[in-house]
Image (cartoon, helix red, strand yellow):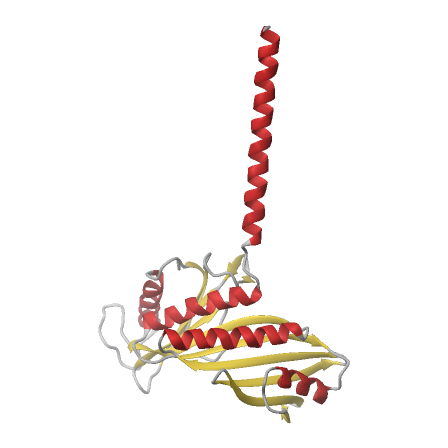
Length: 273
């Protein structure tokens, strides 16, 4: 009788253990299922970047986003450029020479936003495509239109087989140049003032919901300072040294205007600052 009770207890423990393992696998599977795809991740990251722009500057900010990547095609370069431009709803591209290479360019609008497409041949049968969209920060309606333009363009490029990567940046004027003690500085200010400006920028972004910045790398010279961060809430990131980074902040001190010009890039800055 005692052995039978022990057997039943052992069986119950075994069943409970199996149920716990099953629940854990279901939970893990569910987590994988809800991971955003490239288009959804880009939409989330764009919304977060837009919120940062609104948080750090009261003036309209400039926003630039890009889809870019390699594309394999047996079409001749001019035909390949024309096919992608047409799919994006842009006019026929024109050939220009950039640093000794032929680049096919097409300019127009997507969902009302200025758009510029470029295609460069890397080798026979392999090209590099880049689409840039530009916007001026504004209200929620502007963001929704931009998200739709980004989604439709990215979807078109993916459907054609382009191996797309996404990045974006906000540029604007945040505040008069200030030093570590809060005083407006002259154009001869040094790295301490830039660090203070970058601290202020970082603090404002850290106040946004879910955006907790973890510093990874930083750089500074007389006129410019930048930092890169790991941000768990941002799904698109790149490897930089030992860290996966998703955000880069930069402050440039304009000696002519005395203003701090800010640039916020995700996952890294790919525009001039």
